[in-house]
Amino acid sequence: MILSVRNKRELQSVVRKILDHAAGGRIFAFYGTLGAGKTTIIKVFCEILGAADLVSSPTFTIVNEYRTVDGDSLYHIDFYRINKKDEVYDFGIEEYLSAGSYCFIEWPGIIDDMLPQGTIKVRITVGEDGERILNID
Image (cartoon, rainbow, N blue to C red; front, side, top):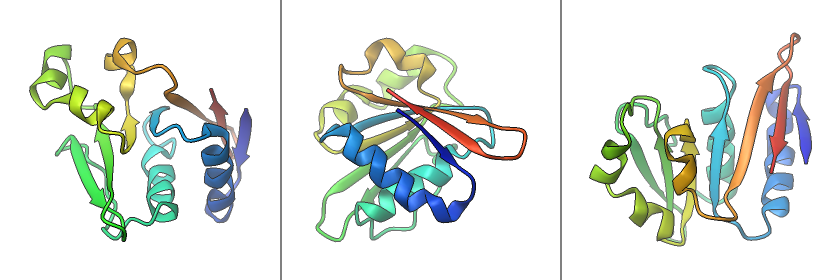
């Protein structure tokens, strides 16, 4: 599925389409250059899923856990600063991936081979006019 986003007002609708397309899938991997909008899109996912917490980039913390109004966990993971695969084992990536909670991963390239089958991959490219093209598989 390919979707385009021309402005932030369209994000709610686009994220709902992605969730429908995911058909219950809970692990999402986001690929794109710096500034492509990965964190911005993940904020909308968390908002739609009922996050009661402030959603922010986990670039320095690596993992942020948000709670929904129902008490469910949403995990937001950022591998931008991870240089070696051993580091992802140090903070227990397997537990996050197998928790059954929604898990949103930025810069997942280092763990591509660890992503479970059914992971929804969102590849974001930026057009010349700033439009975001989302290729979802």
